[in-house]
Structure formats: structure tokens, C-alpha cells
Length: 466
Image 1 (cartoon, rainbow, N blue to C red):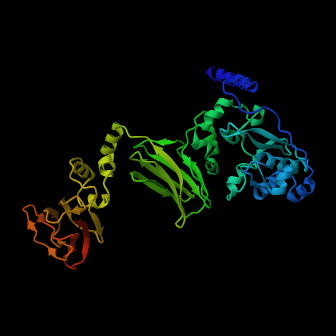
Image 2: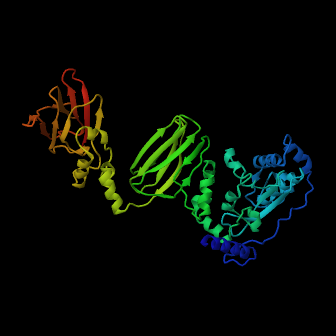
Image 3: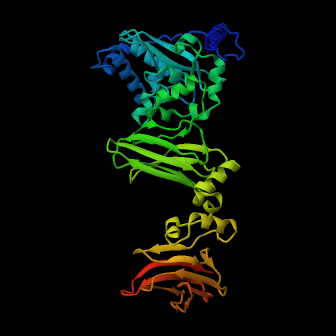
């Protein structure tokens, strides 16, 4: 019953709108466009442009393609008629639509020029086309917005426009020209214009998720991520978060078919932290799972080796205290404290006995520098860290303690920037070895593990002495 009254109210408001009684005032005169008289021989040109086409629909498409390839927009806004547009091969929307009108009617295609507004324009209107094909179906097209698009997929968005797509940025003077089962009212159109990620996001309609987009719009939910479109790649999304903002600590999933089998998707946060995994399946589907762990924007990327592009951007809501606590509990390495540090080699630290929980404890106690030491590991090293300086930057003359547990057939040594080796380790009763030393010169300090039999260095921890 509630839904019935909502529909009844919408129909009533639509009728009031068409009578000019709605609260938002429509800014243009509600009159049909009258095509200016022409002295140009459009029949001959029309026969040439539509050569080879049989149906009215195919002829209209050839006319559309010819206009979008052959004309430029008149930014000086002085050319409003077809004849002048033909002379200069440019014009404003009205002139380009008149060219379409003359070429189409010369082929017996019933054609109308629709007047209205595009986006939230308040000083000047916009014109686009409605023609009738062989099946008596009314078809919407906007040759002006199809001009000069290098990628045919974008240009084709504006031919045979789905009425649900058209209404996002085209509002006609008369509701029946929306071609919607239930025309929207002017207030709803203006509300859509407040959401830039919807109205300035034509590229998202080439990703194969149109029905999901329209379902959201039907619910008056206009919040979308920011889509970007770059030439040369084809991605068809199957599952994707269609929201403008993500939540910290929540896992999201994207699945897509990618035309190039060598290409893949990625997720990154500039200057922040994200948990991220990618899988490829035999049926050509790529799956990416990602969890934002800070409030930096998340960017979904396309990587084809020699071609890299950022294709979607999500905002991330600031974390609540509860979310930060949950991250520290379930994913300590991604906590706010540890994620603020640079060069944390989590695998190396975990391999050598420094668990995420222990690292977080040291971080919360202020015992970590802003930049962690650097690990270089060749073969499988065998030692456990009891204590090392947890700051990549050391000071000349300041004492530092290195404490390890390692097998007898491998031993540790330290080499300073002068090549001097330090190996006077003290053996402790528990079998571990410790050494306290003060760097004597600026440069790089190396802590190394060497295999006893071969003498090969299997692990290096590097510090910068200042």
C-alpha cells in the first residue's frame, strides 16, 4: 500500500510539473523546436552518407557517425542552423541536430529535435535527437556529445541512448520525451546533478555494469565511485562495490573479465596501507580482494605491463576507535602505529621471531624508528632476533646492542663503512650471542650471517649511520 501511494504521488507531481506547477522552476520555454528552412541539397548527401545501409536504424547510425567524425563544436556559439554548419563544418548542438534532421528525413526517417537542458545549465539549453526506426521504436541520440571521441565506445554511448542513461544528463522540456515508463520530475533531475561521480562519469557505462547502476538510480541512490576511462583496454566488471566511500577494515571484492589475458587489476592507497590479493581463474575472470586499513583514497588499477592506468577511485571513511582496535587485534602489522613506519619487511621480521604482536608492542612503547632496517636475504637464513636496533638510522658514537640466537654452523658479524669487521660476540648461558658496539664512521653498517662451511653470506641487515 505504501508503494502504491508513492507511485501515485510521483505521477501527480509529474502532472503538476508538466503544467508548470512544481516547486522547482524549469528554466526554458516549453516549445517544440522548429527547424530552420534549408536551401542545401541534403538528399544527395544523405544518399552518399547512408550508402549500403538498409534499415532506418542503420541509416541513422551512419548519419550519426558521419556527423561526429566530420564536425566540430562551435565554441563561439554563432552557428545555429544546418546550412551555416554545412559551410563551416561546425556548429552548436542545435545546428548539428538540424544537420541530422535533414539527412534523416531525406531517408524517410521520422525525426524530431528535442529541446531541454544538459547537466545543470541555467542560461542556455541543449538539443538532441529522437528518431523512429522500422519497428516504430523511438531512439534517442546526441550527435553533439558524440563529437571527436577517440574511443568508439564513448562515442557510441550517445547513439541509441538508454532513456535511463539519457535522463542522467539530458532533461527535455516535455516529460513524454524522456521515453521513461515513469518520467522523473525536475527536482529529481536537479538532485542527480549534485552528484558529480554520477553526472560526470560517462566512462563507467562502458564497463558492463549498466543495470546495476540503473537499479541504484531507481532507488534514488546517486553515490558512485569515481570512474576513469583510458583508451586501449577493455574491462567488463561482474561484481564491484558501487559506493562512493569504503569502510576501514572491511573486505571488498571485485571480479572482472579482462580482454588482455596478461593484464590484471590491482588496488593501492597512496601513502597508506591496504590488504590486497589477486587471483586469476581459468575462465578468464580476475578476482581482487582488498581491505582499506587507513582513510586514504583507494585506487583500482589496470596493469598490462607496458600500460598502466588508474580506473576507479574510492573515498574511505575515517576510522572509528572500534575499527582501529579491531585492526590492531586481527591484523597488528596493519595497525595505525605500524602502518606509519616505512620499510617494514613483515615476512623477514616474522621469520626471525619478531611477531606482529611483538612489533606492535614495541611500536606502542615508542621503541621503533620511523624507518625500519632493510633486510637482504639470499638463502634461507637461520637466526632468531632477540634484540636489534629497530631504526634504520644510527648515530656515530652511540652504543647499540645486537642479540641473536643462531646455530653453531652459522655465525654473525658486523661490518662498518670502512670495511672493519666486528665479531667479538659474547656467548650467554642460554646459547644466544650478544654484542654491543658504537659505529665509528658515517656510512652503511651491515649485520651479516655467514654459513660456516662455504663462507657465503646468506642474510644482511643494513643500517645507515649518520
